[in-house]
Length: 257
Length: 297
Image (cartoon, rainbow over all chains, first blue to last red):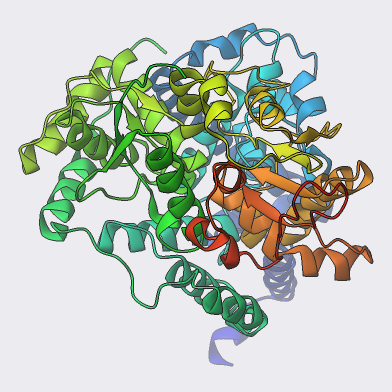
């Protein structure tokens, strides 16, 4: 009270105004800095909000541009590694890829649109799309493209980029399956199907394992499921090779993209 | 009879042929043995990495499949990989390493840990192509003991053995299996879905999408009165066969179509017993009733 007693009435009103603004911005998800508050004393409500929004938009734009450039550069480097990756430039947007894709009906962005978005400099929408994950790698698009664009391999590169940048939801099915597969293959040198399926469902939805038991039993009695994983002989040397490969993975070739 | 050309191949079974597709492994070995070709299993082979690895870590995936190539190169024969996925990955790795010397250097660096080196001399091949191109349809037909007359087959090639640039058959309308089984007396049905995708690993990640794709393939085969679908890929086989129940439940259909590996059907024609060929491992049983049309189910 002693602190407040020194304040005049208009000061108090402004103080309240600040608090209200603070709350407002908090709920709208706009961070306001306390340091900026004194500046607002002479502004009206409308002006304050407009100003905050403008600052926010400007910041977003700057971050967006920087991120876009970064993503784009990594993608172009990936592309340089793919045989025939430069063919992306030749795309004429005919849509043959979308037409021949067996799963394009469930995609949010079709393969043709992916290339269009790349040209429109919108890597983030591409990477957050369902498309790159739903591709079954059947290569129908690659074969039918009149310009020889390696669509499937380009989607692979985008997938790698999205994984690298961690742009996907938690417990994401495709990533979980890949991760389960890789950890198994790394440990034993060979894949082990029941282990893979189990690891996958533990990562995503453990309750679904129950639904797979009838199929498991059927296959088991037909002698199509091994009880123990097969290993390769030199698992130790194999893991050394993998370690070295990880290091090699980080070396990026410098090439004109 | 033609003069016998004995060829030797290095055999790369792949992980699924050890377990869920054991019938494929048994029948490939049987067919090659019966045709007088030598198949030597690659010692200490490792997983090829499949599409999972290729689509997440590029260099590492190339390294692990190049290890197989480096091991196989010592044998001095072409490597034969029956699994479509293994075939694609090994073929692709071979191609990339030949094209991209930077990748080759990176891969070599990693392989040095096991004192291995890959000198790019290997050819990656699929059994179907080996059977048709090296051994020859006529030679196979002359060795057939049982005619498949009256069996209506739907040859299903799947995606990865014909696309994107394997070049051993037509990409949209491959003919090798058709010609092979025609020579053995079987009847090829009209099957427009022969290279349509079965969804592959989408069956685990997005089951709804994959079930729809598989339903379309089965529908096309059933509409055209197929007795059996012949596949070249372990994943297609398990998707089409093991999930038929689920498809029936979901789409209220009534599919009960046997799905065999093409080598199993070929093995039957060459006089193999179902047990030798692993046909008893199928969930949906297939029986060959001799020369009676329409009763081959």
